[in-house]
Image (cartoon, rainbow, N blue to C red; front, side, top):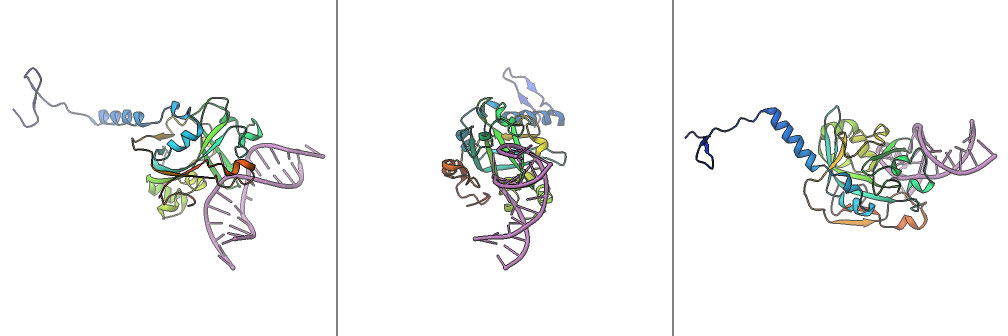
Length: 227
DNA sequence: GTCCTGATGTGCT
DNA sequence: GCACATCAGGACA
């Protein structure tokens, strides 16, 4: 029997099947689909989603190539009663996406410079979302460096504005399905890392809500926005 | 229409 | 630590 031949359970000699490149590609895509977080993940409470997103992988597919990064910092914005949440001002054109179905991207522009990426959570009609504040770059690092005009990997995505610039995320992605093809999160079967909870950044105007520990950072990560 | 504010980042002191 | 860049959204007249 040849080196690559095998015997079947009935004892027949079986020639190995040649696997074509197209089969490998489709198997790879099926594997990626399995890893992609389903919409049901985002239907959990916003706090749970914010915690469980830590250690997951944000993936952006772009004409310049794909980018990915391990999420190391999130913040939860929970409902109309949360004075730090944009939706506390009511349902407007800007906040419409937050009132929509979970698992979609809420991207807004602020300070005249920066885009912010949120993932909508909980049930349709209840405005809540998780702000992705920082990721650890994993792939597509060269194109991130080009967009950020920065060579220091630690500085590429260590803040919500920085990561949107690095991942080419702007308002054109507002409302896109984060369970779709251009932007999604993968669960690469790693345990949720040890993390810390702190008050959210930059929400001093939010009364008693400013002190709620709704910011979650991976303990020991050097890729977070503020230690 | 005007005015004010903001879930930031950077560069300068 | 602080000033400032710059513009969209929301409040208000």
